[in-house]
Image (cartoon, rainbow, N blue to C red; front, side, top):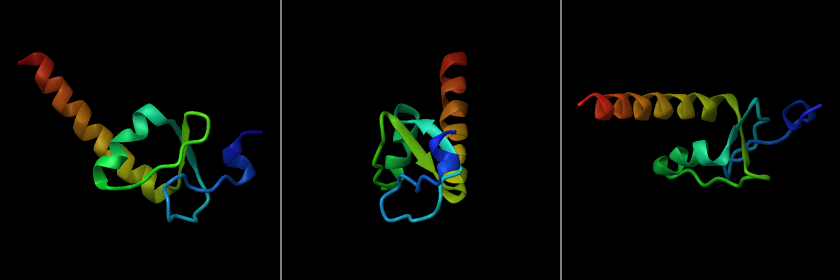
Length: 72
């Protein structure tokens, strides 16, 4: 049984929601661009639904820019 199923809290400071997703700290550093402080646990970051949705939006945007950079 993993930490998410055990009821791990969201790793964003100030958020008390239960986590639903786990991502690596290296990938989640893009959330710090939005002024969100993270507290990683063993190089993992646990995110609630709200913060994971924000993470996906930012990751998608960065991947699109990287794709453009490689083509051009």
